[in-house]
Amino acid sequence: MKKKSRFGLPTILGVLVTIPLLWWTLRDIHFAEVWTFIRGARTLPLLGTVVATVAVYPIRVLRWRALMQRDKPLPFIPLWHATTIGFAINNLLPARAGEIARAYAARKLTGTSFSTALVTIIISRILDGVTLFLLLAVAAAAGWLATDAVIAGVPIGRIMGSATAIFGALAFMALAAVHFPKPMIALARTFTNALMSQRWSNRIIKGLTNVLDSLAVLRSWKRLGLVMVWSLLLWSINALSFGLCFLAFNLDVPWHAAFVLQSLINFGLVIPSTPGFVGVFEAITRAALGIYGVAPGPAVSYAVAYHFCTYIPITLIGLWSLTRARFRMSEIQEQVQERISGTIQRMTGRYPRIDEG
Image (cartoon, rainbow, N blue to C red; front, side):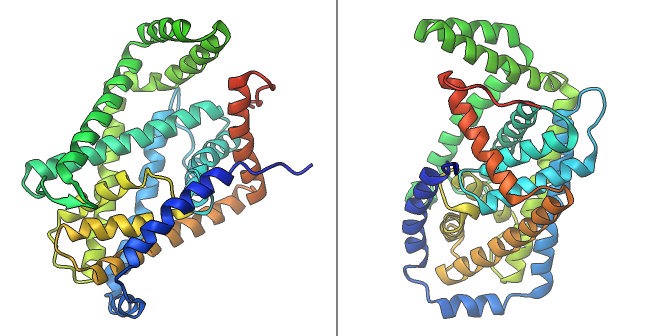
C-alpha cells in the first residue's frame, strides 16, 4: 500500500503564508521593470555573488565536522555530499526536510548515528542564529542601524529585543547542558515526572541523554571557540555575497547593510513557507532594503536575482551529490517521511522504533 505523504500540512501552511507575502511584495511592481533591472545588472559582481554563496558550504562542512568529531575527524567528502544534499532537499521539499535528509545521508556515508548527526545540525542552526544576532547587535551598537527603523510595521528594536530573549535563552541552556549535564537531566526528570506518566518521562529523559551525549564535544572551550570562528567566517563570506550583489545592481547602500540584510532575512525565514522560501525571501528583502531607502522596483529585482544566484547552484550541486552518493530522490523522501513518522510513533509508544543502523 502506498504510504501517505507527511508533507500535506506543511505544504498547505507554506502556501497560505507565501501567497499573501507574494501579493504584498509584487502589489505595485511591474514585471517589465524588474526584468529591466535584472538585465542591467553587472555580470562580474553577479558571478562573484554565486562564487561567494557556494564558498560558504565548505565552511559549513568544516564546522559540522568539528561538532561531530570524537577520536578523529570524519572525512570531508562524505560530509560535503550530505550537506549539499540537505540544502538541495530544503529547496525542493517543504518543512525543512533537508535537515533530516542531511542527517540520513551522513549516517549512510560516514557511519555516524542519525541522532548524533541531527543534533549537531540543530546545534549548527543555533550557532547560526547566535552569530547573526551578534552581527546585528554590533551593527546597532556601531550606529549602522537605527533601532527605531521599521520593517514590515515592526520596529528593529523590537525584533532585536525578541532575538535577544530567544538566543540568550538558547545559548544559556546550551552552555548549561554542555557543562552540567547531570543536573540538567535531574531537573528534567523532576519536571517530567511531575507532569506526565513514568513511561513518557522515561522516553523524554532517554532522548535528552542522547542529545547531551552528542553535545559533549563542546565541553572543550577550544572546540567551542573553533566552531564560533567557523560561524563568523561563514556569515562574513555570506555577507560578501550580499555586498557583491549590491554592486551588481548599483544600489546606493553602505557596506554594512549586507550584514544587517542577511540577519533580518534569516530571522524571517523561520516562518512556514514553500520549498526554497520563494515569496518569503523576496518580501523580507524588499522590506529590509526599504530601511536604506531602496525603491520597491530595484529591491524586488535584487531579491529575485540574489535568490536565483543562491537557489540554483546549491540545488544543482546537491542533486549531483545525490548521484555521486548513489541515493535516489525517492529514497530520500521515503526516509524523511519515515523519520517523521517514527518520531511520532516512538512518542506514542504504539509502534516499534526505527533502526538507527
